[in-house]
Image (cartoon, rainbow, N blue to C red; front, side, top):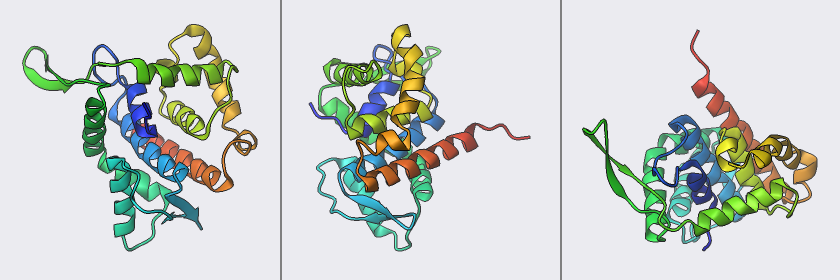
Length: 225
């Protein structure tokens, strides 16, 4: 079963049994925003021209959240930077989360259950119904960290988002793999390493997305003085 980048990122950030996210909305929502832009770049739907996000393909991905994002970029008359779109998608991330969760429910990967906080406040949780797709994603990135397989472009995008959104420990639950993960991700995402895997245009978008995502996360988590 094929998963897009935002689905992969969401599943990594979601506790399989409790059905709740293991990270706060700052990391989660900025990760969603970064995943959308990276996936659109991989699919050849957007590229950077003089630091401006430019549409290069039609909204025909058959992925609702990606097609809606292409349409949003098309509809805005003024050309905008990656940082602008990270902020825009972040602001709409609650709705994005709802759409992606429903997609994963429709695919039979998650299920929706009612829960209560302090036995009073109702909420929905999304425990795993079919662990196979997520387990395949986790196995793939673990094999990359351990040097057992070579990364594909989407793997590098996912690893970058995991690192910048501080999900490394959650993504690599084995202590042995986690100990190697930080250095290995840093090595894999160096420009010289990325150039062996990513098309130059995609590499340019990757660098801009990670820089903007890191900046947005830092701005949201830095205490006021």
